Image (cartoon, rainbow, N blue to C red; front, side, top):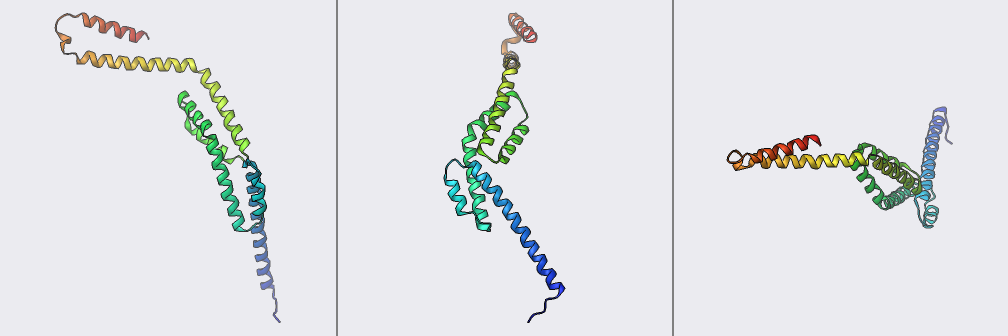
Length: 185
């Protein structure tokens, strides 16, 4: 017969506590994974999958992680037009794309496909309203860009002209008129 001393009992107790802590951690992870799989699934296959992988074993948890990643990838594919439109609006309005990337990270943290879509749609509405509110300013900015390009082109052509310094000085008056019009605008 084996003699159980205090040291052995303490070691068994620590081992049991570690096992119980690991089991609790696995249970919480499984609970979260199952909730998110249900939230991202679009068909009834999710419940069958969850029934099949309801255990706390590492294989079940890994299968659930892979399934959730697949579901999130499907969500990303469905969200692609929204994400692209948001990128265009951020670029058009000159907003910082770091904010957009932060939004995309927050979307990835959502637990349901519906919540993901709602967050993207809310941001899209906000950015469309913002773009509309500054449309006059954006239009003026585009006009100024076009004017600057026309001015640069005119100056290059004027400087490159071979007959610029010979003959009639009428072209100098034209250049001056263009420059004055450019300054007024």
